[in-house]
Structure formats: C-alpha cells, structure tokens
Image (cartoon, rainbow, N blue to C red; front, side, top):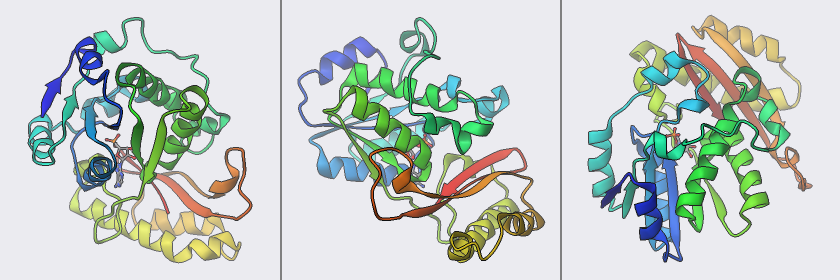
Length: 269
Ligand code: AMP
C-alpha cells in the first residue's frame, strides 16, 4: 500500500487509472468503512482510501478536537485489506485559499442535520469536490448511514461530474442494532445500551409513525426517559421525494439525530 500526502504526487500516480474507486473517511476504521472498501475492491481495479478529519465541517471546535484518531491501527487495517493507496491530505495544500463557503448544493442541506449544523454539508461537499479534482475517481463509495450526506453529494456530483458514479452502501450495525460509527468509541457501556434501545424502539414503532398511529412527541418522550440528553430531530421522510426527479413508489425512512452526553449520533433506517 502506497501512503501519499502530497496532492500533486497523488494526481500524477492516479492520472492514468481508468477504473479507480475512492472511499473517503475520517479514520478510526471500523467494519462500516471496511464494507465500503470491500465493495470498492470488488468493483474497481484500483482503490484509494483517504483519511482526513475535515475541520470546516465541524460546528464546534471541541467536537473536532475529541474526534477519535487512530492512524497507526488504521494503516495496519488498510494494509491487510490490500488497499492500493492511502491518501493522508495536508491541510495547507487542500485549503490554500480557505474553504469555499459559497459552493452550490441542493437546498435539502437545510433540512434534518442542516438545522442544527449550519454550513456542515457545504463543507462536506467542498472537501469531496477538492478530492475529486485531485483524484478524479470513476466511482466513490459512501455509506447509507449518512443518508443526507449521500443524497447531497450524489446530487452535486451528478451536476458537476456526470461521469463519476456515487455508490451508496448499506449500513453495518452491531448485533444490538447500533450503527457502527467512529463516534461510538466515545460512548460508555451504558450509553451504548441506550443507543441500542433507541434503535429498537424506533424500529418497532416505524410503521406506527408512518401511519400516524403514534405521535412524534410521544416517541420523543419515551426516548428521553431512557437517558437521551437531547434530540435534534426524529423525522420520517419519503426518500424518493427528496430530490427531483421523484420516483413514484414510496420509500419511507426514519431519520434521527440525538445526543448521549456530548456525543452526537445520527441514524436512518
Ligand atoms: P466517516 O469516517 O464517519 O466520515 O465515514 C466514512 C464513510 O463511511 C461515509 O461514507 C460513511 O457514510 C460510511 N460509514 C460510516 N459508518 C458506516 C456504517 N456503519 N455502515 C456503512 N457505512 C458507514
């Protein structure tokens, strides 16, 4: 596995690749990332993984500071997976003129997480746009776990880079239902149990919520009682009606964002 930080060197190396798959991550590699990497390996000739904790997409400095970092063990996991290139970007090369706050993305950015995290999705799309210009992959693999992010990146790439395909990959979960996330490392055992209960309650009540047989207020009360500190939102959306062209058939998903102490978790299913 080649480990590259210099963007010009990287561009030169991948320039002639015709079937390059890209998996962008913020590191602390877990089985969710690994499932993306394995799918990418199956479908592409060469695979590049990036690890970069993109500061502009964090709304709070403290959240950026405490984000888990495990580069050494990440490198050994990626080597075992036979990743061709690990890209470890250098901030001053990536943002020589600062982030692009005026980048145009779909207005869906304002919904769900956008309500509590102003500018977050613009910063996410901005960094992906910068990576595309350096790597120009054929396919980019992203997790359904971050569905709003996936929808916004897909829309942006379709508009700006029609030849690049965005592949959404299924969410990998613990046995107790909790979606794997690097942020789970910040949770205590008790908090992990609460996260599992949140998932199971919502999963069981999903149909009732869709059919309006239980109110969102009631669900929020139940979830608050089991130890959730703050609920940013619980919403049911038909994901086929978010971004045009709409599809006829309905596909409802529950979206949730909540805090366990200061750790913010999101999920959808
Ligand atoms: P992150 O390192 O959290 O930025 O995630 C990098 C990529 O892995 C994103 O496309 C995520 O959506 C995806 N991902 C994160 N957690 C999971 C999971 N549990 N299952 C599948 N994909 C995931």
